[in-house]
Length: 221
Image (cartoon, rainbow, N blue to C red; front, side, top):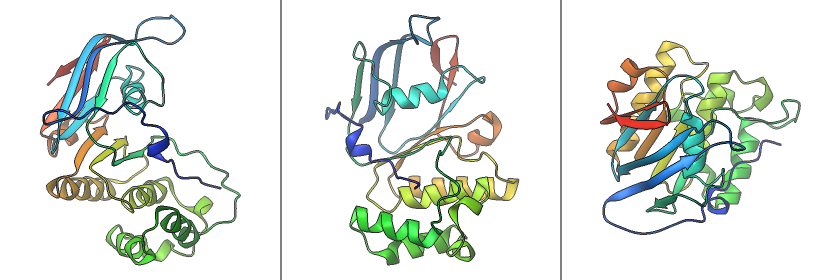
């Protein structure tokens, strides 16, 4: 079954301070002592930001998100998160596509787990134009439809910080604009957005901060 990720089980480092919702100091990281992905990096975003992370393939964009979420352990650096209300949508969503569960059943299950009314899920489904998919098997959804479903799932609960890894993968241009328009709307509702995006020009239309990862460093563009 497509099991939703419980961020409360992931985040273990939590410190409350100033207006920074994420603050990283002196981040250095490498896999198995190979070439360093990050070298003494300092990185922060404030509550209310719409921040995009860009960079070449393999530069460490997804790795940075996983370090922030403590999905990758790195006790040597200081990573502080100023909220416990976090939602995360990964770039790759792995599940058994043959598992016989519909969109409606999936959302009912997650609504029950999160203790929110199913009516909230139905409202989000309408907002993201997935009403016609309610009775479809999740395994039959297109990549774009599945991405939108994961966004709906992430918004079932209270969220102060929404972290999304390349939300426009497998989407046509119209759907890309719709997703970003909705992310911007969420940002206008005081939800901080942190997105990995490969298209700099596209992200500049929405983000108030753009960070470039290059050769182990992070630069504010």
